[in-house]
Image: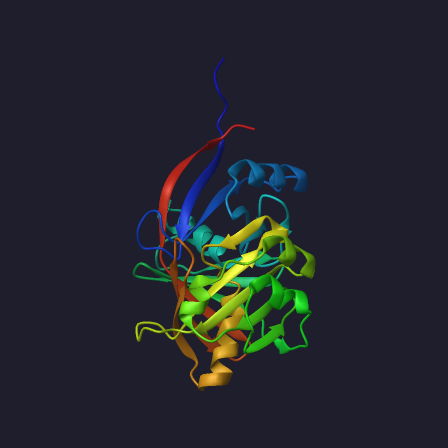
Length: 267
């Protein structure tokens, strides 16, 4: 029996310029919108931090993102991966930008050489009196704690302390937020700040590189340094570089991407 044509599926490492670094995402190119349950099952099968689903519309692409457990409102690395696929697979010319229509509104991407730049909304944090469970879960005494609509933001004393963090994931799950961003100034002059991101309640204990977290980190560090452009490093095991430019209520996130494999989905 002849097999029917499948749905194009790619795995891309985003915010990475070489294989096995950055944050992996699956990108699924659909001819039509699929049921949410189907997309969630595909994301669970991929078992990557995010799976992106794209449907062509007259002015760009509808875009939705799923972790293995839930649909999310905003994802930077899977958007970068999606834009990378559209250019690399020839769906767009390198000179063309692309607009994505998402649960967080219209997002855009441009390509300059091999650098992809995303146009996202800022997601600034407001200072809060955080629950004691947050400090207990992280095992540190924070310099600052804030929260935006998605995540807690925590600044700590040093990059060494940030890299040494070993959070209690079960306690973090009780916070009722998407995740926790932890940041500090960078020790090296190569970077302005470093961060890590934990989201165990959404099925991701530690995300390798989190574009959407930098929508919060950019405004935070701009307020403290007076700068609006940053070179940031997410200090996960895989690691990744994010170029951040804050422009009013928008933030530009720059990064590279590498395709790991492509194939056809037959379900």
